[in-house]
Structures are given as structure tokens and as C-alpha cells.
Image 1 (cartoon, helix red, strand yellow):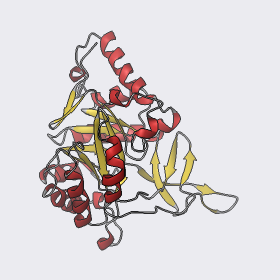
Image 2 (tube, rainbow, N blue to C red):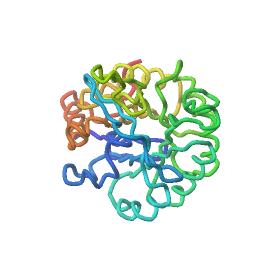
Image 3 (cartoon, helix red, strand yellow):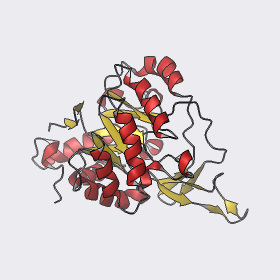
Image 4 (cartoon, one colour):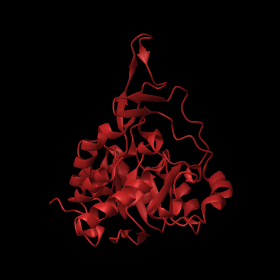
Length: 302
């Protein structure tokens, strides 16, 4: 068997396969379908400082080769997570990573500071695609200044590996990645969902309650691959690739484009055991091609 070990800064992964936030619950929900300890890392659903009810229904819609969602970061807040969820997941034998969201740099930092206290949470992933309530609702992640403000605030209070999840809804994602790196991000993950819309022509109205939502699934993969390639050649920190991955072949494409690790999202809804299948598929491909380590293909495309 080839070695699948990779590092995200000083975070050691058994293999490069992780789950994307919001598609795998807290991991426990999938324990009957896949051995959780065989996944390189599990990124749990988005966590905010205070509880959030999320958006009104309907908040999901199918599209060709994908889906739209506007769930709205529904969760019970970081205090509930620390008291009720953390004790249930802390002894799972893999990297349990918390996705952190907020509405201001201060709220991001306060949430991250609480997670920093949890010994068995080795890293966080910052979702900077959230709206900045002080700036008319524009997402933090669509400007270098907005992204920098969040990373800087969190870096001051969070002392473990910090992954920043980038929005694709920008003109130049490499600039955003460099801004995050400059403020102390240890890694960037991309892409988050693309903004999209679906329409019910009989009712003459949008299918989603707030009109627009995030597009994910196989349809976004070509965009994600291009952005991962661009960012991997723009920064020195590790890149985590995601967007439409559902097979080992998909994952290998991202690794060859420069990703050190990958996340699987929407495909978990189709096949709850897809993470193990992708991990085993990567290993089989490496064996078939005479590779002794996954590092032999990371960044193979120059």
C-alpha cells in the first residue's frame, strides 16, 4: 500500500480525504455507514457564537448535476457545541475540525476562542463566505480587506492550525488567498458554494425561500479545479480542494492540481460511504501506477 499521510501545516492526516462542513453532520450521523477513523478529517457543521435558526423553508433545490441550498448556518451555538457535542465526538480517532462562522470579526474571534479551549479539536476552518452585517451584507470573503479582517482577529486568539475556506464568488481568488496567508492562515480550503438560483415557472417564483442559494455538486468541479490550481500556485501554505468530488478520480485531479488534501461534500448525500471508497480508490490508483506515496502526485500539474 502507498503512504497516504499528508500534513496541513502541523496537522497530521492519515490520508488526504476529509468531509466538507454541512454535509456530514457531526460525524456521528454517518458512523453506521463508514468507519469514521478511516477518514483523514471530519469537518463538522458550521458553528457560530450564538444559536441560529437558519432560513425559512424551502431551502434546498435540486439542479442538473448539483443542488442549491440556503440552510443559513442553522446550529445551536458554540456553547451548546462545547457542552453537548464535543463530549460525543472528542474520542473519535481522526481529526475533528470545527467550521466557524460569524457576522463580524469579533464574533468569529469569540467563537474561535471557545473552540481553542477544546483539547481534542486540533484545527478550525473559517467560513468567510458569511455576510458582514456592518458592511451591507457583503460577504467577508469577497474582498481582501474583509478576508484579512477576519483572519487577523481569529489569529490573535486561536493558536492551532487555521484553515480558511474561500468563496469562489470573487474576481481573483488568488488575491484573497494571499491576503489570508499574510494574516497568518495556515491553509486555505476552496471552493465554497457558487451563488445560484432556481425558478418554479408554474408558481412564477424562486424555488428557494430567499431566492438564491449555494450551488454544489459535480457541476461545480471544473470551476473548483481551476481555482485550486490558481491558488496552489499563488501561496506557500497548503491548499485543501473541494467542489464536486464524488470519486477517487475526482480527488486525484484536485491533488494533481496542487491540493494537499480534499473534502467531499454533496456526494455524502448520495452515498454515505463515499469517503472510504475515495480513500481506497486513491490508494489503488497509486499502487497501479507504482507510486509509494501520495506526495508523488500532489502538484503534478505545473
